[in-house]
Image 1 (spheres, rainbow, N blue to C red):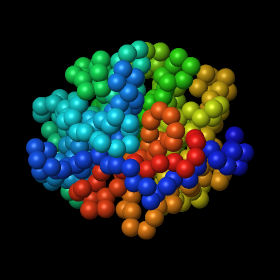
Image 2: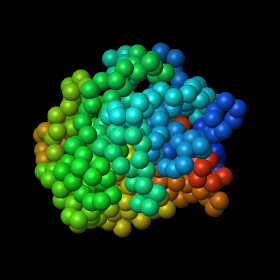
Image 3: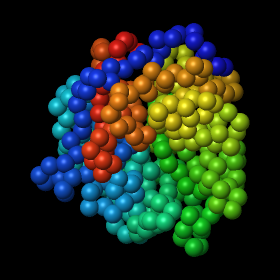
Length: 357
C-alpha cells in the first residue's frame, strides 16, 4: 500500500516558534553537564507525569556527544511539555567484561500491566572506541529492564535479542561478521501483542538481511512479536538498506499505530524523502501485525514527515531523536534533538503541533 494524500492532515504542521521546554543537560551535581541523544517517553497513569529515557553522554566522555560508553537517564515533566526534572541514571552500564559494559543506549519504553519496560542496545567488552572509524568494538544486543515505577529500580531480564558472537579480532570496523550488531529498538503494543522493530548492521548471514561483504554496511530492520513483552519471536525483515527505494532506510526512530495504519519512521531520506533531518516514513496496514496479510512497508507519498521538518532559521536540529510526545489531551507535541549551543550540549526540545494528530 502507499498513502498518497488520502488524509493530508495526518501529520499536521508544528509551531516551531513556540519552544515549550527542553531537557536540562547541565548544572551543579550533573558531572559538569552532558548531552542527550536518542529518546523515548511514556505517560505513567498513577501520577500523570511524562517520563523520558535518553542516552546520557557526559561532557567528560571523550566521545561526547557520541552514543558509546553512555548510560540511560530519566527525566520527567508534569505535562510532557515543560518543567523537566532530571532524576539521574535509570539504566546503568555494568563492570568490564559484562554484556553491557561498553554502554547502553537508544532506549524504547512502554507501560503495560502496571510495569515499565525499557529496551536498549547493550554493548559488551570493556569500552573500546575507535576514534578513526567512530565505531565501537564490542558485541551488541537488545537488553530489557523492568520496573514497577518509571524511576526504577530496574531489574535486568534476559535480553530480547542476544548479541551475536563476536569475531576473534574483537573489532567490527575490520569488516562484517556473522550476525552483525543490533541497535535502534522501537516498541508498540497492538491488540494484546507487543511488537519490536530493531536494526541489524554488518551481518554476513542473517536471513532476509542483505549480506555485508568486505566491511560494506547494508542494514535491515527486523520485526519481533511477544505475548508478554519479555519473550520474543522473530517474524522476519521488514525493511532493508540495500533494496530499491529504501536505499538508506535502516535505523527505526519511531513506530506508531494511526487508525488502521502502522507508521514507521527511520533515518535515511529514502525514495526522495529528503527532509532537513534526512528522515523517511513508511506505512503498512495494521493487518500485517495480526498476520492477516504479508508485511509490505511502502514509502509515504507525499512524505508524511514533511511538515515536521520545516524548522525556522537558527534552530539547529539533530537527527538523533524524533518523537510524537505521549501527552494526554490536546494539543499534541513533537520532540526533537536540538544542539543550538554546540553538539556537546545537545538536548531534547518540545514544540506544539498546530492541529490534532
